[in-house]
Image 1 (tube, rainbow, N blue to C red):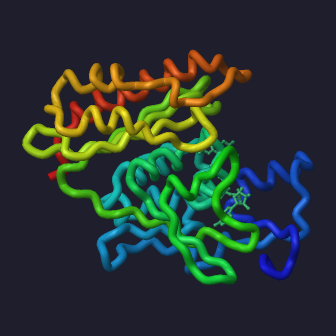
Image 2: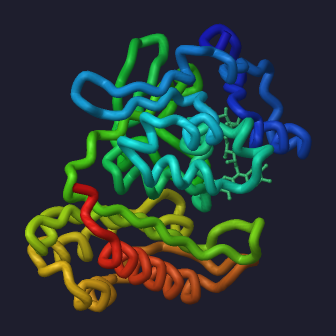
Length: 271
Ligand SMILES: Cc1cc2nc3c(=O)[nH]c(=O)nc-3n(C[C@H](O)[C@H](O)[C@H](O)COP(=O)(O)OP(=O)(O)OC[C@H]3O[C@@H](n4cnc5c(N)ncnc54)[C@H](O)[C@@H]3O)c2cc1C
């Protein structure tokens, strides 16, 4: 249907798409409902130890699955805390990523976890990393005849620590800044760093300057300050909007980075 019908759209949880249709912002010629396809809802460990989450797994399913809680607790926690019960029961992790609304929860966290995106289409399957999958505001590398079938998250070493912080305006509103951070810390030294900003730009932004600055440093209270000093906000391309100015958004992004690092320092190692 997706291949044969020009203008067909995939319907997953419908938490965004149905609203888009109600507002006449899109007019697909057909809807291909993937929500109940069991193979797209499988959650399992892969042979290489990665966690595989089917694209149509709902947030509620992700939150409740013991395999997710054990392998990737930050993913389970994010799914459990997302919006409200209605959205969690219908919305899907794949839909969250395919929509790539810049304010969405999952893209920055999954980018920080080095997630891979498995795609299927008429030419077969391909796998992209976050930098290649998220291409712009509400757009991804998916072509119209492809679907996301699964998200694969590499296993975490025992020394990995993860934190995600965000600021939203009002309890049920959109985020204006997010930071997802993963540090691997060995014998008190940061051996690997992933810092990803969200809600500030059209797609998740890797903060490479900060990653380089933090790698090799002692994981102590000086870390957040070092990160702020390395934060080059000219790399973030954002705009004034109805919620806040671009300058405020950048400032709030810095604060989320600092808070995420403070949270990581307060955590014990997973091992
Ligand atoms: C009241 C409310 C509050 C919300 N607040 C938040 C929030 O705070 N944070 C947040 O992250 N999200 C929020 N959302 C959005 C929600 O998380 C959506 O569920 C999500 O963005 C889209 O997921 P879905 O499964 O509902 O996808 P759908 O609405 O069904 O689809 C969204 C888009 O993705 C495409 N798509 C979906 N799955 C696939 C796939 N497997 N392959 C190819 N294309 C696909 C569809 O064609 C469509 O273009 C909110 C939604 C509501 C209704």
